[in-house]
Length: 319
Image: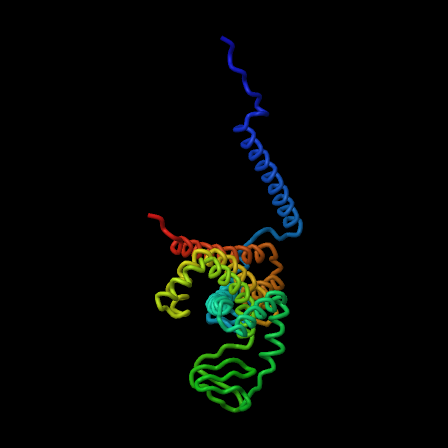
């Protein structure tokens, strides 16, 4: 009885993929080792080997706006932490604001009012096609810095909007300067407004696509049961559309977190701004960049993990 033919290794469909992956992994390791070795040699020649002891040195600069108590005598790590808190502050507020505004605009695309539908479409097409940096410059220099001050400030019950900021909680004008229990600077306001307006245009398209994925029969069945359009959206359409909307929201939320690094255009002291000042003073480019990369990576991974959990929760469970 003749022995079975032996398949050559180069034609083995099980072995070849493993060989290709192994060779690719080896090449990647060699390239990474070369780059790391080159970096270490250059840092050694420049006398700048990786070190983190400088984080305990006094920063020597102030952070203009922070939720954490900070002064120039505190160390660099405290300054970077204050910048991180400022970044998280604008990111969280931006996520909430962009979600609310984007949802309203996305739902407006299905309004029975033709004017409202057209306005929603114009908003989306206009905002999405203007670079975010230009929008931030517009909100900061054209809108917020043009606000009146003193007695000419915009005054509402419990709220004052002036060139010096937004004041909440019984604002008072003392010697021509507004004071209030809570003050939001124009830098924070311009950055938050720009991020919310810009990201909401993309979220509106995500919401519109999710609502459009619901079969028209669901709308017709709701009308036959006597539900109003608002009740239909709340109880029938949006719960079904969430399984399509949530994955799209994940990428938009991550984009908003990364876009917050453009705060320098508004003069807002976020993590990137503080890190740039730290780099200029210490010359520790590699360490500062690693801190920036790690911080934004952790923020994005946390957002992704949270949205993946929400996505698993809204998916239809088969029984």
